[in-house]
Length: 162
Image 1: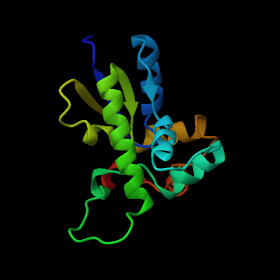
Image 2: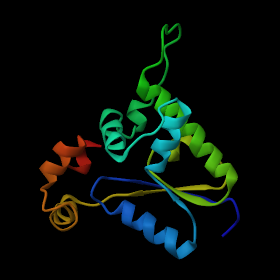
Image 3: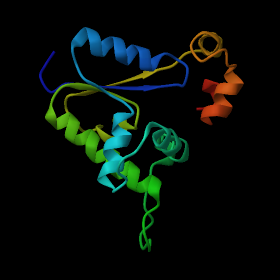
């Protein structure tokens, strides 16, 4: 693999994308960045000393953004930017810096969009049908149904809603 290669994995919740990223990280010997990006971004915008519970709350308040919800700014916007826009900008900056620093794997965080013009970034989207995701809910997510996973993480129940 060429030095400076960045593998970006986006995924449908419950499809196994996180596990795939972990396996690739181990097999390829590359560092995997996931929720650490939230800590990095929070530090960049002045939110220090974040505990794990605070991280969970921040993730719930500012879910990983999809292309549908990118923080496009309206010309003439006045006042301070909303927290989710600040976080997106800080995460984007961190993602670009990590990509410049060397080979790695980045899970989610809209890294596919952020690195769309990065020459050595390769993006993959992991998805699964509802039956597979339902089975994983039972075995991986403490017996939760697909509906419970959706309610807990406020995401689409099936791929038809993407």
